[in-house]
Image 1: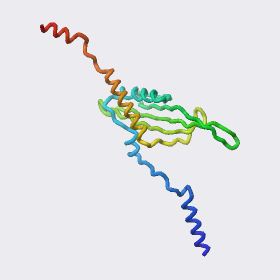
Image 2 (image 1 turned 90 degrees about the vertical axis):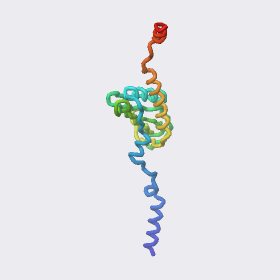
Image 3 (image 1 turned 120 degrees about the vertical axis):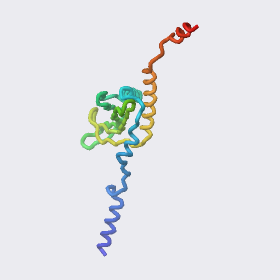
Image 4 (image 1 turned 135 degrees about the horizontal axis):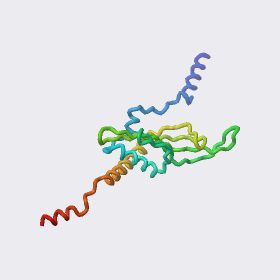
Length: 175
């Protein structure tokens, strides 16, 4: 009889214990790559500065960037809030959006951009911990749409322009 009570108590404790609670399903690497990566019909020489421009337009501060490796890291604007810490008293804690980007050339006129957005908790101006990845596809889709527009603008700016007056001169000779 006592064993049944102990068993019932143990089952109840397991059912309400946070360590045994159902966790959110983990996203697989391939599914995450589908959300975070996109191929563009352009070279990495155009895609890299396009990504830099989109990040800066979105309010990110570029921390590191290397065109040779294709890596970019940036942090967004932080929002701080006040917490009470034992033995330390009131302190400010920050939530900071961060992004790392990899731009790679894939063939002659294709490049791939992979974004990795995370929300970090800042313990100081330079130390961030407790990063939680952003797996919602909406911010990635929005960023890729902006990158695509910026690539379009850059390709149009780099397109060769016809010589001014060439057609008129040829038409004048033909008359």
